[in-house]
Image (cartoon, rainbow, N blue to C red; front, side, top):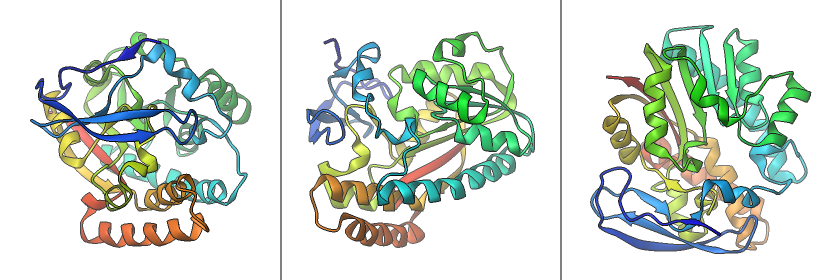
Length: 298
């Protein structure tokens, strides 16, 4: 198997990289992967992950929540209830941030199609891209969405979109800097980029350490913090204009982490940690388990 071994930081270009943590793929394979960090800028990443062309087997499970519609189990039921609330909140956020109510929207890594379907109902003209073929079929069968494969990304016309969204997708993308260059090409001059990613400096991440479910190795290649994502935007001539905590993520991630740890009553224990994480994020949104970042081109 070909693996991606990073020797130069993709954010700052430094080569002072060091292993900081060993994480287990509790979800699919049981394999272990090292998380490394750049001593110069603090950017963290999973080392020696399978290259993009070969990582698919780590996603091939019916339980992978981004590509399924299962509501089996209490945690998945909670996930689906919260998702309906967050979908509407996300659409309101992009309308407010872009000052556009029904413009052109590109959703990258759309999964099974819930977000673009909701955005369409609010009047947005949506194009959606998803690599996973099964997820595209689901989106077509359930929402009548024509979701394109990732090969369509490179042929989209320049300066087309008022908004580009990526909801918990950027942490999966191997060619990170090339992706940011594409944002510049595709966005209109006043367009906005909206990204949601986990925050490994959050309250729950610090509490659980290497057990934290949102490390999700090897599927998550990059591990962001508010300062790192801001630097990444600046590197590619984007200005960070808004940050919003995603407080519900702490509950789901904590419940999943407790399940991985084999805890008794993982729902209740995760609920307790999620409550504490939510309270910490109220005082300091940089403690939130996940964050939404809104960027504009400089």
